[in-house]
Image (cartoon, rainbow, N blue to C red; front, side, top):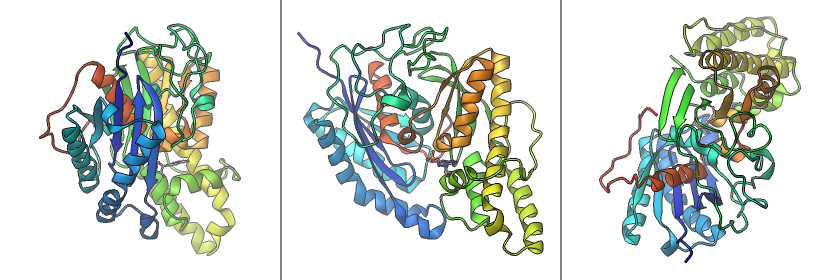
Length: 393
Ligand code: KG4
């Protein structure tokens, strides 16, 4: 007799994206995200507006995710939701919805740490091409085969490979099977987690055993880019704008200060200040300096951020003798950072894991896959579990 499929609904509402996704037996069926344009006019996320928009979006987004997955709510095994960290008002919408939905269906709830979700986004699998990758074999590459955010993947194979849970388990072989195309990193691996609020080097020993070995002591990388973009009057969020401009600029045109912080920790506030002070001087000489040089400014800023990130990551990988290295979070969408990862793979023999664009920024697929891991361990949470605005990995 065929086993009943494990169907997880994931819900993400930690910041300004309302997202819902469905995963069946470890494979993504749908991932629907409603973004909130309302914040653009303010140059940053306005928490009160974000929670109100989540309230409007949550029901239609979940409805769409179920419809696109071709799944009824009665078929769900559990509801996984982002419990934190994030904006409290935003989190509360997702958490409350998840609680009500799970209670009405009589199914378990699974609380997910948003940061853990970003790291585990590397385990999202979509529809399998013919035979599923088994241990040591190469499978599909995330970059090439995964469908766009919100697309419905085709029917899953019934013979799904179980998710690797801890050290020694993995679909890609440690000797380079993953480099040959398998998309799932083997434990342990290193993950550079870079977003608007975090810049961390995470040692991932198991899906539920992650150690932050380095992190920013002040601003995050994405925050630094966003703030520099703001002082240039380029709009919000600055990351994608800087990325686009940087492609046409000279990364060696300007040099900004780099931090000297011990260990694997980061600092980005000095770079932000150096960028601001230099810009102020240049604007005194030429009031149109930004307009005349925005491509070079963007390229030089991006290069400085990427160099800072990669220098520490490279040192950590060398010291820990780990060659499986992943990147996650919103800033992992950055072209220069992605290129730097590819360059390191060539130069240092790293096997790299770069998420598809739709899994870099906040999305419910990463929450659902984390839910799938926890479901297998029957790691459920009680109805009274509160949302946390601040929580470590
Ligand atoms: O993970 P994320 O979506 O949200 C949180 O921080 O919660 O990351 C958002 C950050 C923003 O700082 C945004 O500017 C940055 O990711 N970002 C980028 C790019 N796309 C998004 N930074 C550099 N280049 C990009 N292409």
